[in-house]
Image (cartoon, helix red, strand yellow):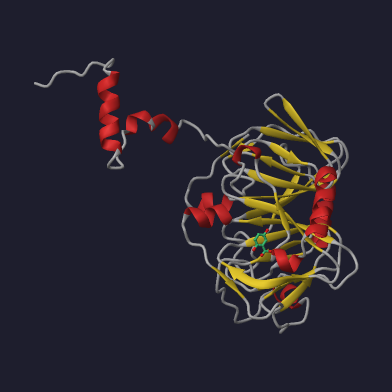
Length: 346
Ligand code: GTQ
């Protein structure tokens, strides 16, 4: 019969841990409760990035480095709980990218998928698969995984957009690849608007077979999204937590527009006071229109147009609109749902 070990035998334990540590072996019982907690435990904290503060810094970056030299002139928005990790949530990277008139951000491709949400200015383009799309505020544009893309600005306004990339997800799987194009800009092989005509009219080419999970429609103009929400707001009562909220879809499958990031747009009527809600996907919100507040525990963040705020996994929050508000948001929800992990409450 073996003796029952004395729980107070700390010294013996420590020397045991030290011995096995040299062979990269470690006792589970010392970490079990942080490894498998009863509910989500994330280093991601609620945060807001105020446009008023960020905008001058983005413009200042424009005086310090060219888009060409930087390859991508971006100020990364780091979650205060994840400093130094180039991410806004545990699973998502976000940054503000600036292209000045006359500039080009050279063509490259990577396994990370990117979304662009246009914050300010018109007239810049992003080119994907031989087609340029001109950007306007509020447009949601996709750069699918492993597609050549370059950005340029033939117009006369500085253009700034919010980049959202699945960098940390791809990093988790160690599946990163990057290639630089020989040419600065890719050849234009399609006329602007082709993808919208082909896939954005509730119709599909007869013989279309999806070759990836990413939407073949990679530009979702704000005009259309906003009009849909405005009409819904006239037609139906708002959802108690989300107001009028739609998700962007891949028109060929009805699934998410991007395989790794879910994207949404919602309208909160003036005076809307949302019920508390939480879900396991930490979410990034970009304010398109209106002023309002997001409340969580006993704190309040006030938001205005072009502010970006983050609500971490399983943090209960509620949205309040002082004026009519339009919010764009994105998260890793498609990944969680594909893995049967996603939960919501409220
Ligand atoms: O525009 O391709 O914010 O490659 C980070 C990495 C943007 C881009 C980012 C990128 C890009």
